[in-house]
Structures are given as C-alpha cells and as structure tokens.
Image 1 (tube, rainbow, N blue to C red):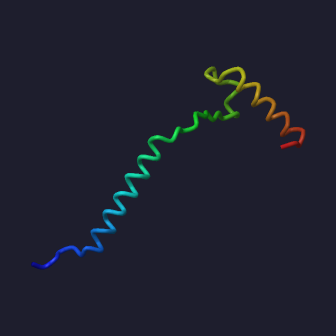
Image 2: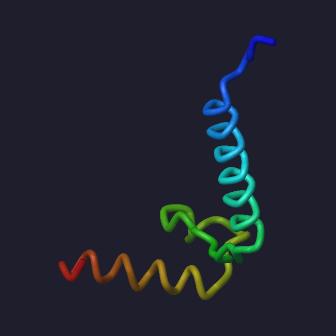
Image 3: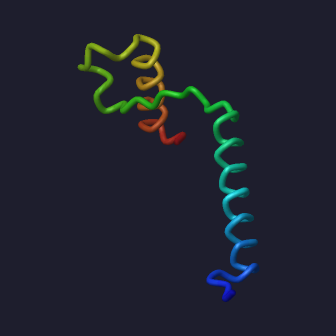
Length: 69
C-alpha cells in the first residue's frame, strides 16, 4: 500500500499543531495589561476625558514648552 503522506511530514504537522495549541493556551491564560491611551490634543475640549488626564496632558505640554521633553 503506498503512503500518501510521509511519516516525517505527519510528525512535523503534529508538532506544529501542538506548538500552535500551546501558544494559544499560553496567550489565553496570560493577563493582558489594562491601559488606556489618550490623545492629549483633544483633552482640553473633549467632554469624555477625565480631569486627571487633562491635568497630566497640561503637565506634559508645559514640560515640552520648557524644553524638558
């Protein structure tokens, strides 16, 4: 009986499948960081920006004007 797929190819496919499933499992149990990024160019006039974000944006802008950043 002729072999359609060689044993080596099957080993590579099984190894790839195992590695892929392991990678998916690790990504599913790894906690993702909860960060939010705000665009400071809209902070002054946008009503949805929190006050602390507006204050941080003002600090960053004042440091840029003074040449610190």
